[in-house]
Image (cartoon, rainbow, N blue to C red; front, side, top):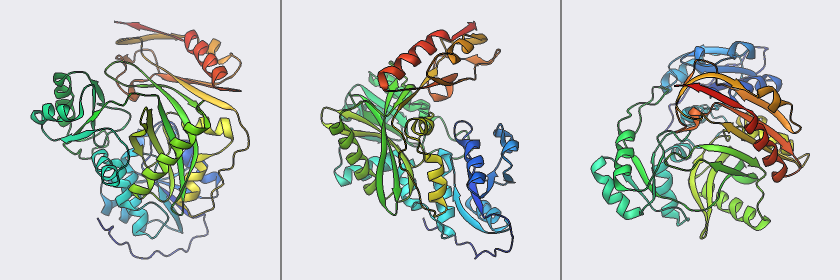
Length: 421
């Protein structure tokens, strides 16, 4: 799709050039990114359909422009009406990476080719391109009806993973051990017509072979079409039907040969998909056959991983994203070598939160950097099915992964979440 052209801008104002954000994520780096833009000498502008979605937005001092952010023409008109110079366009939201790339391309600003971003966001298209290139990945089949599920399962084998082609946060992702489970999962996916941002959802589900092996994420950063590996994160997920991420450790304690293997594979994936600029987050399992892609995200990692990188290495990936989006030089030099990790608080079951205990004790532990709890009394919770069910997190630092794991274990053990049925 060729981006709609936007007329050339005039730039009279004496204020800093604007960095436009097309929406934002609602946790993690969302509001931090707006602050970081201002600290970088830029004027942060948030285009949003609903400013009330963002807690802490007023404190960022960002210019807020309300418009239909699901429509390119509305975004283009909003940007063209902005006063002053425009430095770049970016986003911290999964749901808007393609629109942001299209907008940047239409303005001749730095960014990834829109088709490359769309290929990353469409998990079925990602699989097709990797298959054409001959890169290792799980067996897969795309299905558009529940009736096609059985044949898909036969082609990929059991157990299998069923997922939406454009989801986020592991929502509606399910590990299935039987055809009946897979059909149920496909029906759930095809029953959703719009996502949480009101965008149309493709009526397609992916059925993939389950990859057996440890899971990692490879944090990559591209400049001028050249991709470098920032580092590798060890990921832990829940067992059972719903694979919810419970812990990240950075850098992953893996042999150098495995690190190089993962980094090389990630670089080849980016080359196939056509990513040229900024951060990408690839989730990969290291199988007996080698690295195989779980999924790719054309954005910074979520799950507090950029903060772990900052704590462990001193590298600011969020600032790197903003610099890349505005055509500035990007410095990703490591200034220290430590280890950092995050463990997530999960509901002990379904119910209503009565109280949370032990937070101050956990905060007082040596090595604990931060404890965040979102499990406020009165909140209804369920057993965790995706990332949106997590109730908080503990971040810790240490000399190595073993030390960080021990601190996180102790801190999580001190925090109690009491529920009423």
